[in-house]
Image (cartoon, rainbow, N blue to C red; front, side, top):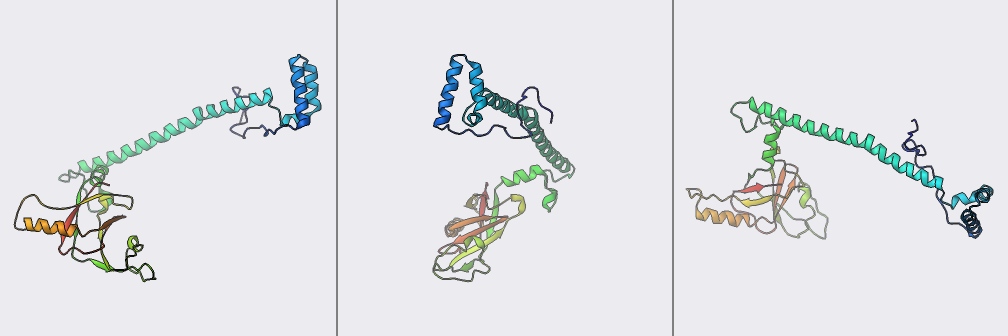
Length: 258
């Protein structure tokens, strides 16, 4: 690379800074340095120059004007390189990312606008056929999960090796020395549930009384929901665990947020 006339002493970006590390002077070198400083103070520049020429070891413990100028040029070269090379690349990549997101949303909206009755963006059963705007809305939407009466039981002992075949990995580490219950529910991928989520979960209790929605039923749902001790999130799955009693009826829980 050609030398930049703005920083003629800089080796960057082709090489690292070309100044050797300095060391502390020994007693002999310190005496010579004091002599050099005396020559400079008395404006005896010839004697000062000869002293340096006759004692090249002083370069390892003396910070010269040339060293200073090299460092200044190296700093300036780094700043120029970032401003003229790196910064435009960052801006270019950011703009490219923005354009890609706009294209995704534009394509999703274009498909959505052409599907007639599916105005909310739902285009089909395959996740790849959803519009991006529909996916974003669904990831923030409350959805219901039905818990059946089909609870699995397991016992994991704290002081013994047990066969954990078939038990979800999330609860293998629970050593209770007594049976507990769990139920694993698959979640539609459109809701975007993963192991990093911490959703809010509540029982689904209707507000309008009906033949299947009575005060007695509300109380039973509350009682069954109270049996749930812990909920684990996994990739497109929710794992409900009951440490004591298991629910006695089928009911729905609402899952909200991420």
